[in-house]
Image 1 (cartoon, rainbow, N blue to C red):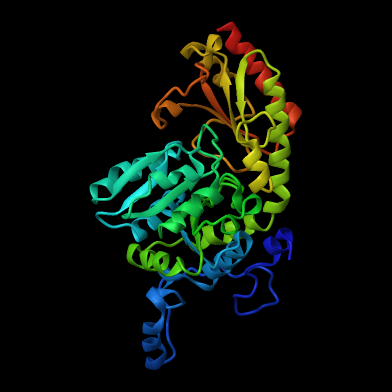
Image 2: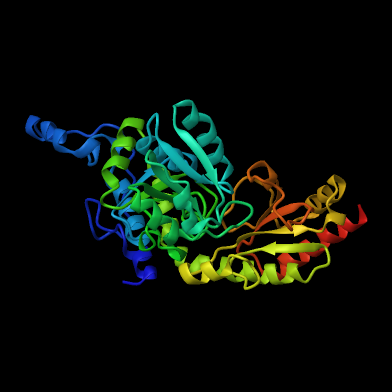
Length: 392
């Protein structure tokens, strides 16, 4: 089946009455058993992977996980209550004191903070690497390297990683390859076709799509899944029944929403490139971008998230404040992926070293998310904001 059909039809079987197209919401903690033999039978479940206690999953949980795993192309999916848990849970499940993990230098800030903080405190050796290293990562892999973490494109600077080349070298050394696949969603990048073992999603973003829930998900290969599931059991990770219902509802329309985000993002990127106030646009799906060739080779599409460098002469604190405060349609906040367009200044200097990179613009970096509004209205909103910045 094509992805659109998978999104609509996946996870449809759980529930007492298959005539209903949506699985019911199970507000429950305790699961009752008909007899002692049935209760004892739960001991055969692999680390609670079955309907035995609601923290491990309800039929509604498994319906969403089944649909997401099918769309992403993995063996099994497990959900949790936040994207941050989706990145920390697998790392805790697969790493121990004395292990070595490689993490791209342009990674999402929460991932970097967790690795440099908690993982390092637990005795894991954490090393940040150039996201553009590709197959050259072989020089950084040690005998104790257990995980090579990837995120493509990278947060804020949108560096596109050569995932197949990195995965090939990691697997030669027996290391697992993790990938934060939130930017492309399961629709536009198929991680398991490119050598990834564990795929991480902030369900909060494109999958949910409506800004009304917080959730994470991890999908794994058959070989990697037992270790992930054991970690889920030990950490007690789960998702709420209402959020799970909303996440599955959002998944049903992802194939309709994502093309609009992609189209609007490109339209805004082209418009911004033509502005004197803009130094450079960072968007892998645009031909001028340094990562475009790999994006075109490996990805099936793009969402609406990208960034641009404001010209240095328009990047004072007063000018950036005037620009942001004039916006009416673009919201400011710590998320993206819903119908609402978003925009905020970001500081990649906090996460990338050495910085600035050779030839890097010196102005303010601004992250943009193109929502589902009319793109001409979004351009007009930005135009007024640029005028406010010039006048500041």
